[in-house]
Image (cartoon, rainbow, N blue to C red; front, side):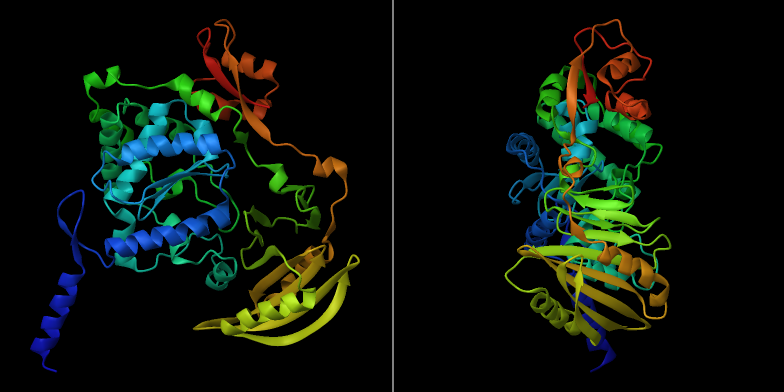
Length: 478
């Protein structure tokens, strides 16, 4: 084929990869059609729900969904299959998945103080979708590196086995550019204003985020905090305030309606879904416990628990499933999947763990242009569930971590201690100010631990020494 024909084909391919941006009206490099974008969003929904969990409060879900739908109707792509979901995570964040899926965590809902704030945050995320920011980045990068805490050679394989390496979940870890953020801010202001809300509350949210910092999880694969993916540059608050109009002050804020909607929301980690105490992970709902090696990070997700060593060169993925299979049958099915991804079975055998049947297998997993990995798979049968522990590190480094891996698996047992089982989560409670007491005096009377006063001062958009007006609703946790 001649160089001229090759060049012509290249130009045709480039032209095919261009699309008109729905917001700017300008042509941009884009490898994904709108149909592909929508399909990606649909598939990611299931991944997000399984990984991070949907918050179980139909009334709150409906409240957020109704407001989100009203805002989406004001945008440039009202025909997308928009859906709005509250995630069961204490991390302070909101994010968008291409194709119309918008998520807010219960953590960010607890932080905000008005319906106008929620409208601004949802509007900002709708702006990212309408402007196809994530799709543009994916087109340029094809596959962004996942924001996993592991920096070693095992990170990609570990992410794959932890269920974190799918294209959909990678979108959650994309970091937006300054221009993307400014455009989404401007769109969020426009949508909030068009829906009848004072857009000034977007600046209030940014001030709170700036004061409180990035409250993201510390474990591998943890949902990133807002500032991790939405960089808050010094001039963003000024940029938002510069877009405000004097007539915006007449628009709705609805602080009390909002606070009543989020009243009683779970605050912090929900112990019913598992918690670490004194170096032991307890799961009250499924009634099991196991030891966590000292210094290892723990990320407790809806469908799995991920442990990562302090040096980030080793990890354990624990996930369970209800099944009629024996431990051995379950292990052999897992082994087939591991073999498909380059795993070679080295050894296997039956054993018991604290009276529970266990089947163990050892694998060597080849990696392209990287050192092979070693994985020990331990499947433990407890009742009608099988729990699988996948312990991984580089093949050469495995002996160093073997004692820690063994300690995790051999400590797995029934949870029978009622004091560990009967743990209720803390919830957001509203108290009325009397107009005389300072915020910190209200916190003290409510029994709020002093170490959390700075956070709750931010969550009430005040200083701890301020005196709230009489009748004002103040957020505390009990």
